[in-house]
Length: 237
Figure 1 (cartoon, rainbow, N blue to C red):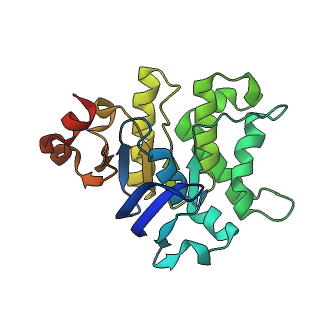
Figure 2: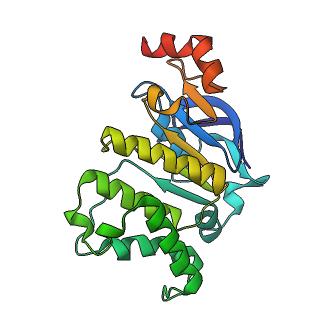
Figure 3: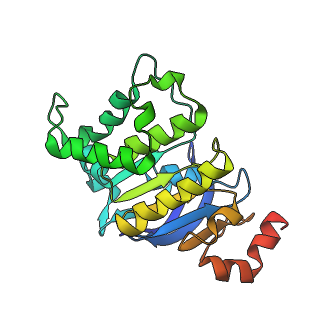
């Protein structure tokens, strides 16, 4: 599991969220919610090692993040952010294949097992029709799927996504939720993703983590979170 205790996160040593504690288990699907600007992206980046926490500690299997090598971290964690990825003259196949780099040799040669992982992810995300296209020619929604595919072929134990449904239409959003549930419950990957869409996730996720306007992190089942009144208070529902 990933365990974090007394965590303070922020940018340039300026705290954004403080006193955060919790754990993420393999096979668990969690939606991270909160109003814009409350610090969700900062929290996600801290949980993936992209920025260092100001204080507190994050552990995987009771081993501190700082004791893992970059290669070990890449085999444990994968992340898909909202940042625009500019990739010219690189095909979808090539971009997704880069996700296997933590498992390949120095030259990045793909073996039979690597190709099987790629094929499984392509089938799961139904992106075989765009596999030979250039990434730069894709729609925003298609690009989002390709970036998710690149993350999944890493074979991570934990997957973090920042607003993964942003560029998707309604049917594609529903499809993505089904995929994330398969990844978490069947592939036993711990998944934490940020979202604003309660109606989309409330019947899919195992837990909702809500960062309220005061920076407190509440962790409850969807049913308990709804009944608590916290969503009404923070989103004016």
